Image (cartoon, rainbow, N blue to C red; front, top):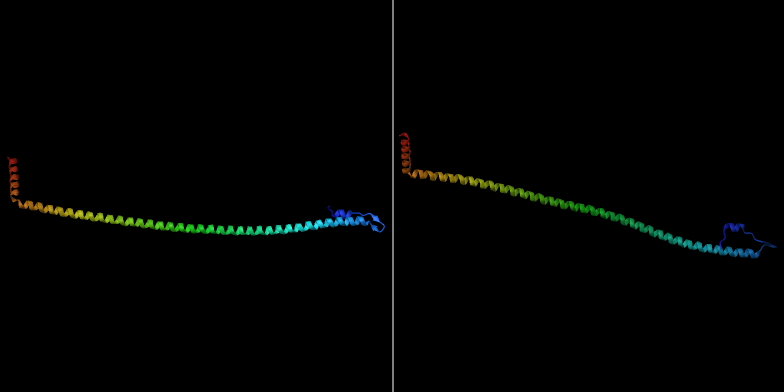
Length: 167
């Protein structure tokens, strides 16, 4: 049974000679004791429930804080990993560029060396041609000098030709 404030204010007891009816007052007191006892029990249960809920709220707040800290540290780790990865990528790129530049330089050096070798071979060929021409010229002169009869024959032939033309 529940008793409200209005019920208490509106409750009227019958009158007897010495005042209110003792039975009605006693019964009403029993009802009130029962209602107040139930209310006290309910209040205790509610307080226990509130404490349990407050404890649960504290746990959830701690979890929330832990999750927030975890997210912040995870984000920091991700950012650090990105920075590290970018740094490593830049180092790899720089190393690759240095190797490429070294390879290009080596190629240029080899090209210059090949050009020098070609020029050297051209000079050697020119020297050889000059020496060969000189050798051939000296042999030709030797042939012409060693054969004076031939010169006489050629001279006579040229005279003969001249005479034939004149006739």
